[in-house]
Image 1: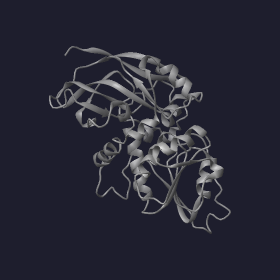
Image 2: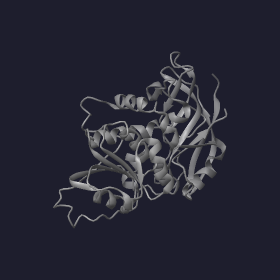
Image 3: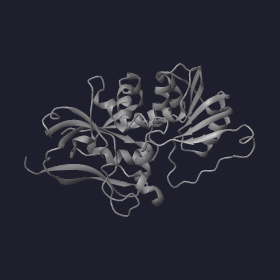
Image 4: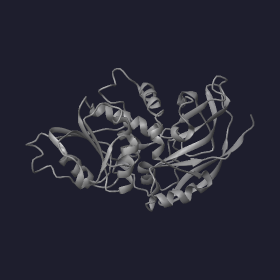
Length: 327
């Protein structure tokens, strides 16, 4: 195949992105040429990149698999990791297959076949962009280890919190609440199998709370909802923002705990028996749940992605905005 052109979204300065063209080579053995059909905007990390808020101390850990450029600037960076497409060329066994890949927003790209996850017919392209977030949610549940009959809350109904809630709703819990000050997110909860409540109306005495709001107030409320010896699983990514939380009062007397959860490593509670591929297999099964479609907004045409990022940074609602490709 002759060398062709591709188009990709780049963050070129804090608060500013653009679509740029680039040369694309033909795949060699062991690689695949993917034509994108959809991608998803992960609001948390991508908006941090958009506003230039990634601390240099964690830029390496936050690096996406096919990122180009440095997250700490000042040069442009190509960042993203929720891409769905069809293999157009490469290894014969992959050609024609629908796939998910941790690739930035780009209409065509060449990657090793090991980077691809084949999609079952039961997972449509739009919903498949959630797979990266569902992997985060699976890891969080493995970290938190909810038990039969537990009383659980999820504080923060964004993309990650809603995904965690959808997975928790499949378990035999005594109580599951999605806690958020946004009435639209409260209204989303019943569609995911949970009770939606404002922070003031949330029920205390929880065995386990998953915190996903990325705010100090949310973390404080998550701790306050725990029963004695309960645990908060912290999924929020704060970037360069310092976070203060009250660990005085009865934090020690009640023996409360805060556990970090992060997707780059398989939870230590499963790492001896599951690898990244095994975890993705669990996420693929979770993605067959049509209730997850309630998390999706759009699609927005790829050409409009720079403007969309600006609107999202300004607070446009929606959990996961789907980017559509007409290529």
